[in-house]
Amino acid sequence: MSTLKLTNLSKRFGGVVASEDVNIEVPAGKIIGLIGPNGAGKTTIINMITGMLAVSGGEIHVGDIDITHAPAHEICRAGLARTFQNIRLLGEATVLENVMIGFHRHETSATLAAMLGLPSAGRETVEIKERAQVMLKEFDLQDFADYPATGLSYGHQRKVEMARAMAAEPNFVLLDEPIAGMNNVESDALAEVFQRLASAGKGVLLIEHNVRFVAKMCSYVYVLDGGRLISQGTPDHVLSDPAVISAYLGDQQYA
Image (tube, rainbow, N blue to C red; front, side):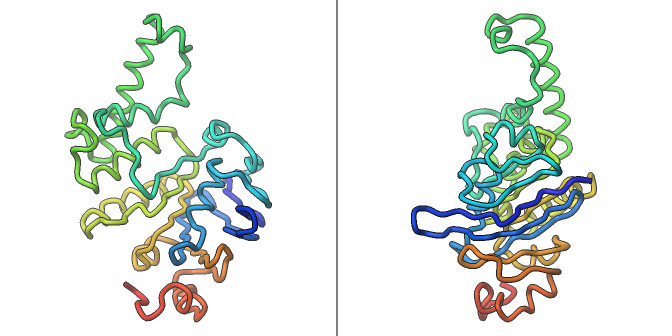
């Protein structure tokens, strides 16, 4: 089974260090946590992994594949998908159409064939629509297929974004604060989704401020502060580490 591995990963903006010598491993079939205070550099890490930010130093591997300086489409092909801290859906498009977009890397028909309305392109569109409908059922969204994405509740929009990410059939999923702003019912529903992903052999990197949620979901946790790892280990170990309590949890340990 493959592993997403960051080795001495660093990012500098001029003279400002956003992250330095970060080493993280996300094995297939595991949910790994990445926590830290605001400005710790967590989203910077995900942006480097997914090619949205250039890497200043270090390496990123998916199994034996070096994606350190790969363009976004090659990173996607290597088996990575992500969600965003701020939901990014096509608001006027339907839920079904948003999920269909996630299948783009599996399309085989040429752009010209689609433009000319050739039968091969039409058949593929029908197939992708059917696959998207199956994905909606997996996320319990089938009743909302024809709704505009922005017409859904926050929790349901998060599930649409997750379904779109999973449509790419990734081996690793990077989740940037997926339950931010959710109530307990909504977060519990997504927790079941994340556990299903891990059970299916997907590696999950979970960035989240809700420490209780991280402790419940993750088998191993990394803690960033000021762009550097200050602790790592099981949730119990990390949450009792004085350095973590001082830098991140403070007096609100399990808020």
